[in-house]
Image 1: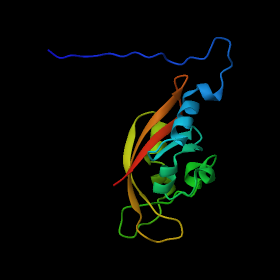
Image 2: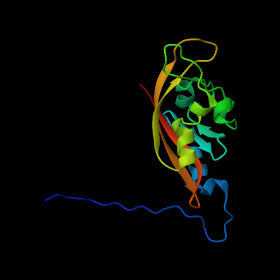
Image 3: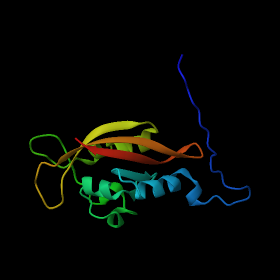
Image 4: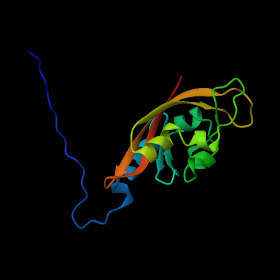
Length: 152
């Protein structure tokens, strides 16, 4: 016979009559977690602005320091994505819209895919990265997306 243990913990809920603050919504809570994570991860809001990114995420995606990326649109923050051809051409806007962080944001579903990231000021083929993204909800609507990365 299998033995199963269950542990319950309290869920943090703001007190009644407390104004809804950014720190109590999903994006705010994930922002703190992502900023302090050891894992390469990224959080963007519904406008594709980078809300938080881990230091290891910046390193893996060749983005410099988190302070240089936070508050900027994801694709305008120095992220250089290239295709998987021998020429390693920069992705077009149509192709960039299909990367997991944006696909999860626009579809409201989980998204996974491989990305090839090129370092700034180089023509090297780039690093291949596996990305897994999930939409982040606020009041039942998609408010952003959370992505975890790993080097392939």
